[in-house]
Length: 502
Image (cartoon, rainbow, N blue to C red):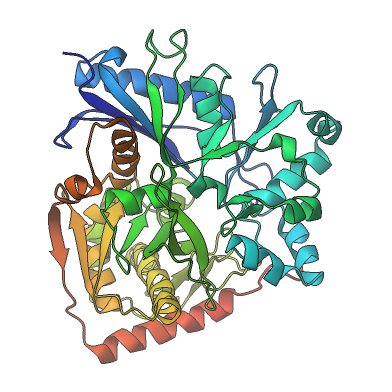
């Protein structure tokens, strides 16, 4: 029979995953492929948009083949994406005008400094819920318009489109018929007013961005477009769910009530707490962001702590230092030690995100002695994920006035038992890992399924969440505090390292 499945495209920072789900949320097919990372200068990170597109289509085909179904048997497609990564392309041809500038890229730190010097921090935060940082799309758009020859004039003539990766994929899948994004991705651009729910004309003027380059903003659970049969395996399928990867993971973890929180361990880590229909301004260096909009329902919000480098630190150990050959080795290496022996690794490889927000911090390893081994470095990298999460969790509790009782965890690293146990220990709360850990793709599938009636309600989805494993704290409060205090000393050492050079 036809139309019994949802396909989810999870277009991440280092690779693309495609999953095929049935109504019972069983994964019927899957495929994955990495794509190339480009580092043209220190602090710069780029992707090839055309490579992302070709990898996506190939991985979709592989997932459909793995599920042994045809594209015509899909009810809908959901897309979730690395957020803030900025693509600009020609409206007439769909050809990118420059490599995509990835969310990790720090080339616009100088632009951000100029905005701060103009005392615009409170203006941007009061409208967008964000801090002024090179992380977000707005300054990346400005940089492209200022630095690609002729681009600003072409943009002002309406010849150029901007989009985050979701918009790029919708454009390509629809054969150039749809230029849209959802509320969650729009809220990460630094030029979208999350209170008035519109592109902010004053902020666009400040950054000198023409309104014409921006996509139409639609609900996260909503039919944005149909695929072009000439492009998508001969089938016209509704693209019915879109959300930035972290909001999608929050949705996939069924964190629908106020105060429920999840942490995703990927290239970076992102702790999000659902704050319901109220946007909670942060005084602790967190971000106020749109979680999602479901059809005609009101927008819902979240508090977010964005940690730039967690899993990427393990990749660095593997690919650059070559002290491990695979991430799977890290658990046994870390567990081979009784303690960290005072070795700390602050993975500020692209600066520090929440709650520190230091674009000039750089990676730092402290506490090294003659007895330090690769196991210490590996353990320090794993522990750094947990310390950074604690920094964000404590800030979140102060902002929300809600004490976290547990955290739902997902992402590629949750299979590491050492990491999950240490996370529970250093937080002092339970860490729950669901049976289905690909919650980012699952959230996109749920949003698409709700829009098309594949699933009837959030209550039906909530009933499908099942816990796979639970970790409870085993560490004393005294030890927890001592370890974290030494971590904060290490963070101080990393702070502002490249400022004088810049």
